[in-house]
Image 1 (spheres, rainbow, N blue to C red):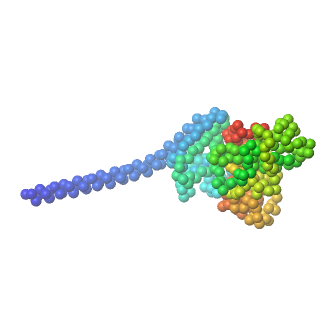
Image 2: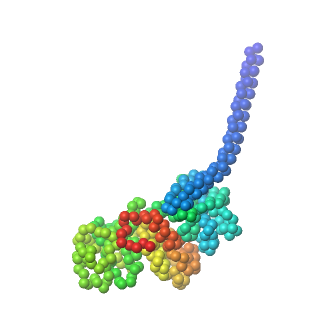
Image 3: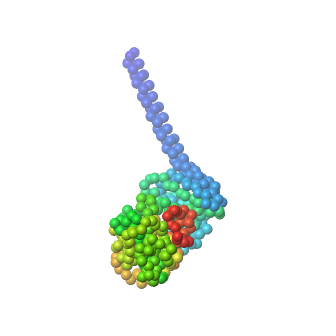
Length: 380
């Protein structure tokens, strides 16, 4: 009798375990399906969040919205301005993204592309009322650290502009200035020829820089070479009424003076650099904004003749910016052959980023990272 009772109990236990395991299995299958379904839904839901933020500020000039991305930040995401697709397709930058290029070339109404970490297209959307005023009028973001990304949209009256955020520009730890050349209370000094604007541009880049997300500057003064012999240096420092261009305020007198030598600019003022800013020697309209940009990323400047294709005949390893990361600031006047040479043979791992100077001026005007520091300079 006891044996039958024990067997009955064992059968009940076994049946109970089977029911329990079956329940766990069914729950797992259901939960897995739920995750799969919610993943697809969540992408669409996150897109709806972005769309609502864009629509809410498109007509409010200067209004800003920051959108936090979670799912979309798990791979590569790209945005393109459909109203500027002809300009995008005419540039070489889009060649790195053949799926987007093909979509634009076939007039598909997609301007927001979501890729996984293997760069396989996962989703495409049409984000109406979004624009990108800065050249090349499309942006791609790839998250390598599995951190949430933030997008900043700014209303400009007709659309919400997704443009470069100056605060997001990273500093290259390899870019190191010779700090001993900078003296607290000192003044950098340049004897200027009548028309040598390039010296002033390099002086500005030397005297102004960002470090640990703080703007630093060494006060400096520029005097015209023709007047130098008639003005005593002590009078120059003490008297603001002299015929001198003052670019920054300064205080104190009897300060040490450091001169700027353009021919030995990088050797004199930089210990090392891994990122540079390239300016077109023939396009002076980009020099000032290029210098301010270079200072903000704490990088030296180099001038290149954007129309002289003979640079292709130069041994690239002899160029001071060979094997460096590079930003090119220009107003779309660089010879295409020179761009190919820089991209393929000169810069590090094809890492050449191209910004239109007009777009940089527009973003600088709206964001003004130098507020309270730059005084008497006409930025625009």
